[in-house]
Each structure stands twice: as C-alpha cells, then as structure tokens.
Image (cartoon, rainbow, N blue to C red):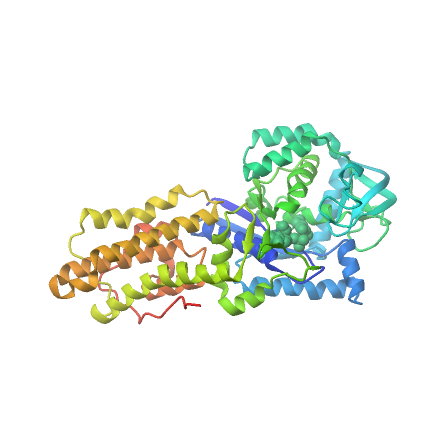
Length: 497
Ligand code: MSP
C-alpha cells in the first residue's frame, strides 16, 4: 500500500483558533480523506506550537504560568479539530517529552555534523513572527510583514545556513514539485539566490523553550524546535520504528504562504545537515481576508470557526472554504458568498437531485433499487462520467476537484430534465425504471466522490442508497447498485439557508 503523510503547521497557542487555522486543517483533512479513498495508508498530523517568546508573553499577559497557559489554549485547538470532524491520526504538542527528546536529538546531530557554531547575535527580531530580519529588510522601522521589531544582542548558536545555498538551489531544480504552487517555488528560489545568512538558532534572554543539550543557558530557536515536530510524530530519533520507516520522507507539508520560507529553506537545510531525506512537498496556500479586509486581531475582524459551524454545519463551512478559492490562491470570506454557495451548490444542485430521485423511487418504486431494462448508449456514457473524471484530477487541486464534481452534478440534473422519469410512469414504466436506476447509480458515484468534501452529507446519501461501508472507496465506482435492494426512507440532506 502506498504511504502518504500529511501535516498541518502546528499552531501557536498565543490566541484562540480562527478561520485561517480552520482552513489549513480542513484542507489537509480533505486531502487525507481523498488519499484514504484511493486506498493509501495515510498518516495525518496536526498540533500546537507551544514555545517561544510570543507564547511566553501571552501567558504573562494572562497571568498564568506558561505551562498552564499552553495547556488551556492547546485544548481549544484540540476541541476545534474534534468539532470539525477532522481525521488526524495524532495531535502533537511541542511541550511533550517525546518532542523535546526529538528536538534535542536533531540538535545533537547538527552539532555532530559541524553545522552549528557558537557566536553572538545582534540584529532585529520580530516576536509576532518569531523571526530574525536583516537590516536591509526593515521598512519604516518594522518587519516586512508589518510586525514590530526589537534589537537583540545575545550569545547565540548559529546554523551554517549560508553553506546550503547551492545544495538547496540544486535540490529545487532536481525536484520541481518540492515547492508548490510553481509561483511560490520561483519566489523561494529567488530568495535563496539572493544569498543566505547563517541563522541564529538559540536564545538566552528568556526561558520558555527546549534547552540546548549541554548548554542549558540557551533554549532552541522556536522554529527549529517547531519544525522538528514533523519527525517527532513518526517516532524520531528512532529511525528504525515502523512509522518513521513507513512515512518519512513521504511527507506533504501544507502551510500558509507566510511561513513558506521556514519550511522550504530552513527545514530542508536542517535535514540536509542532519543527513535525513527531505519531505516530498511543501505546499503553500493563500490567505483569507474578511469581506475584503485583512484579518487581524487588532482590527477585531477575526472569524470564529466554531460560530460558523454552529450556524451552518461543518459540511457547509468545509465546502465553502475548499470550493471558494483555488487552492494556493488568496480568498475573501463573505457571509453572503457562503450563503449563496450553500443554497446554489448544496441545497439546489446536489440536494434537489438526490431528494427528487430518491423520494420518487421511495414513493413510486416500492422503496427498492429499480430493475433497469437495456441501457442506451447515452445511459452508459453518462454512467461512466465519474470514473473518467477521477483520473484527471491533480490531487493537490482540491478546489478544482470540487468544481469537477459539481460539473457532474449539473450533468445529472440535465439528465433528469432530458429523460423526465416522472413523466414516464404512465407511458413507459420500464424505461422509467431504467432512468431511475441510472440516476440512483450516478448519485451513488457522486456521493463516493463528495466524501472528502462533505463527509457527513455523503455518508447520509450513501446510507440512503444502502451502500455498505466496504463499498465506499474510489475503487467502488466500478461497482453497481444491486436492483431490488431495499432502501430506507429518504431524508433531506442540505437545508436551505
Ligand atoms: N507556529 C507556526 C507554524 C509552525 S509549523 C512548524 C505558525 N503558527 S500560526 O498559528 O501563526 O499559523 C498557522 C497557520 O495559519 C499558517 O499556515 C498561517 O498561514 C495560517 N493562517 C493564519 N491566518 C490566516 C489567514 N487569514 N488565512 C489563511 N491562513 C492563515 O505560523
């Protein structure tokens, strides 16, 4: 079985989760579900990033010890994952012993390979970004991201990042899919071509972090600590155990565009220095605005995913976020756009199709899968559309996948309009049964395809078609509904908003 490992970034616990966090996690969940339907052995990781100055400050502001504070906030991220029906296999916290052990082991390996030296850092640091900036990057006294910066002078260990410029560029060239989408790859390559500075990877001016092995005046730079989570969860430093063996380096790291540099430059350089293979891909998605405005805490326009789920249901929120923007691009959140999509795509297009066909079968066809007569060439061609569609999918293009499935739903509604099964009841009941059978089996295939996008609704539709749990993988598209199978009473799946 092919292995696939998908990761979300681990979220800072300085504040409660918002729509950006929900989006990354749902996108990964969609991919994880998609791969499982392909029959792959999937490991899906998410979690929280709990060290660093930003979190330490947030704890102080809340009058809590860092540990109490991170315990509380991490739990809110865990609750969100549960609320969203996310199918992660693990939830990692960087304050866990397994992670501290892994981060220290990686550090030791970097020391052993000669990639780390002790020096002194003097330069700009932005706590909000947990990032160092060169003098040349400072714009009007701020980081290029707009974050406040402070001048830091302290003893620090450095990672010889500058030594990896050529290796990184050669790697990007030899592995054109390592960074996606392509425009992002070019951006990263240009950054690396511009020259790399050695990276400060330890801090001494505060305490909330992983102690540097052998020199505990220093704690590890939060990004070196955080990036290691991806291998901690596979059992690193034990490289012989089954998870590390099975899933590394089959990793796809999905990240927001703001943290691409850490994943596509620093992380691969650390791994190269440690002599470990690099992940398959780092995929950067875009950013959401709220009704056209940048989302920020100071503007008070953050969007609470829990409130959205309570109002519209998880399937609807999921569908909107995945469908509304092309994966990799920026997008705008608007409540009206969400409502419009729910009504047009879910209630009207998909919901009506299912409801019309299944209730007609229930009321006029003895509540059993109808027995078809001979299929016309048209019927057969129609029934083959979903199977033909699936192999055309670029698996990372989840928004296009949704578009493609809805094009099939449109075809089904067209088929209903052309073949008017209800009108055939009196004139040609045999043909009516054929048309209904074709439609029911088409709906079965559609519901298999919509599982990664609408897990709850798809399961209900498959239940209503009495499709067994074993027949819900993509490979089951080739099967057919068995005529005569008893069907339960149909229930509405997508309420109008
Ligand atoms: N802790 C680091 C990641 C470490 S991974 C080894 C971090 N955390 S974060 O909580 O600040 O952000 C997590 C993710 O949320 C990032 O991928 C970021 O891009 C995403 N988003 C935050 N705001 C967002 C939007 N407005 N829109 C879309 N995603 C955004 O960075």
